[in-house]
Length: 236
Image (cartoon, rainbow, N blue to C red; front, side, top):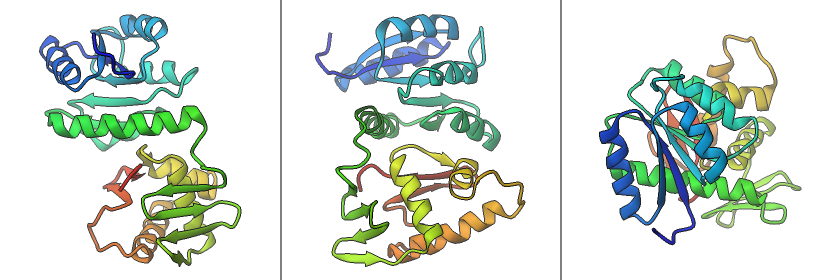
C-alpha cells in the first residue's frame, strides 16, 4: 500500500473505469478505495474518511447528486464529478450542490490528475482554515489584503471597484473550486431574480481580467467554464 497521505474514494459502476482510475492513482502514489454504487460509497466514506472523492453520477442505486448532498451535510471533503453527462444543467446542479469540479468522460488521465491536485490543495486549505495567511491570501504574484480590501499583482496595486473586489475575494476564498454563476451572484449581490444578473457578472469579470492584465481567452489566475462559472486557480 502506498504511503501517500491522500486516500481517494472512486465511485463508478463501470468496472473498467474503476480499474483504470485505480491504476492511474496507485501509480501516482495515492491510496484508492472503490465503490460501484451510492450505498456502498456512503459506508466506505464513513469508515475510510477519504481525502477526496471521484464520483460518477449515473449509478445503479441512486443518482450521484444525492451522494454529493449526503456528503455536504457533514463534510467539506473535495468531490470531483467524473461523468458522461455533459449538459450545462448537470454541471451546474452538481457544482451548486457542493462538487468542487466536474470532468466529463472521455477524459485524459493527465487532466484528471491535475484536477485532483487542485482539489486536494483547496480541500487542505479549507480544512486547515488557512484560506487567509494572517490577513492576506497569496496566489503566486496575486496578493489579497482583506483588512485593507486591496489587491496587488506583484508590487502593483490593482484598483478594483467594490463589486469587483467582492468577486475576486469570493473566488479567492474558494480557490481551486469551480463556482457557478448563481453562487457568485448570491455571494456578491444576494438573492437575485434579475434576468440580467449573469450578464452583469460577466461584465464585471471582463473588467477584472482586464485590470489583471489578462488577454481575452487567457486563463492565468481565473478559469472560466462558459455558461457554468469561474474558478480561481490555487497556483499560477
